[in-house]
Length: 175
Image (cartoon, rainbow, N blue to C red; front, side, top):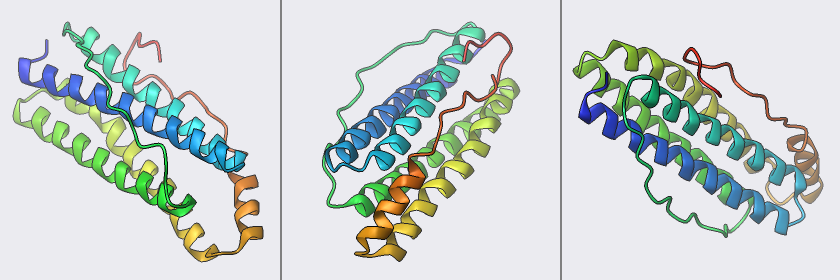
């Protein structure tokens, strides 16, 4: 069973993951408006991943005999100055999410909630990948500068990204 504090914080993280999905869907729409379908695809896949992350928290709270409470999801921005600015936002956002996950791990350790700590380790590893993936695109966009042909080559490459369902982190989880 979850402590009240752990349950509250896991519910906050579920909301943060839903916001992340909403943010990336907004970014997908932004890139679509620029006719950068590959960038839009990358963001749409990212939005799907974040929704899966939210459901992992949802399932875990329920499996631990907790109570999921959903809160309003804030509206994300819908415009960025450039593709680089959008991906810099992604990178900063993922760094923020890493901080939130680390805070949850610290809470679980402090509460001696070993099951939650183990559950969160998947997210610790996932955040390393999330930050690296976003930073890779940031660095490539910086290298491209104003090279439009390079931008379209990168767009084509990002269009190849495919959503794959990650393995369940808990038994019986429908993720």
